[in-house]
Length: 346
Image: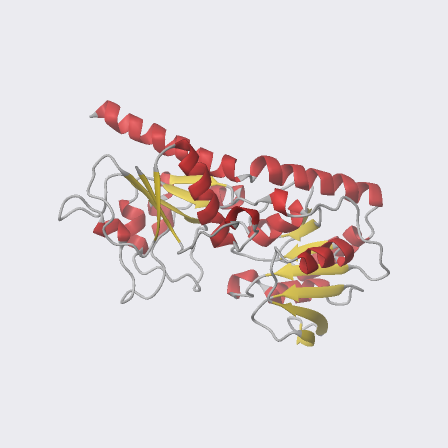
């Protein structure tokens, strides 16, 4: 039995036909794909003792939340009193070589140390950065356990637009909670002075037109959409009819799901390497806002034929590399091979 522990989620009729937030999508499709490969029990990372069987395996996200309200599923499922965790415990989580302050995982050090392997939902950039760490950090200590796996995206539920919008003033979209590592300050500075409309979907700002300071270079007007729902036909129509490019200037995103969703729709993303998405069809930004303004200006003048080629390539890449069967199939095969090697060595 494989016990899959992630964020709490309640399955209902039609769950798989709805596109939901990233954590819900992980739980749903983890249950679906893993359950099609073998017996799976789905619970949350707040679970305590769920098994005492040595042949079982556990695949879970590190416990999230305040320590006084959270259980340590890793330690609670140890088979011996002095053990750090179940011998067949695996971690699955977004992965970056340093954890942002917004991440609240009270038992992260002992859970990562006790895990047999760590399935990092991240782009190749962060896997490469982790493998060369030599700084005495926790991430460096456990780097040999890391198995990098792409974040998934249910592209089939997102409408695809092959061509670019035709409008006098291009529209750029950004979707996030605007946490520190999203580098919203860099985003604003990177478009300052360009004739674009920036739409932000976030719960962190009031809805409507806002004028914000752009890293000391001036002010930028944005249109805040508030909280959006990827399953909302109105939002999907807005993206298809009005959005020319998606923009993401993070310096510490494992693999931003919003970038994958834009790519699945055929909206060409402008991204920093630290946004976690690498593609020959994306526009690649950097940490220098002045340089980004030059890159963005050239992208805005992109011929229609080039845009269409990028859009088709992006949709294909998401379908081939970010399908949940690929993501969780890789995890299942890795765990199966790992446990087989343990049994052979016993």
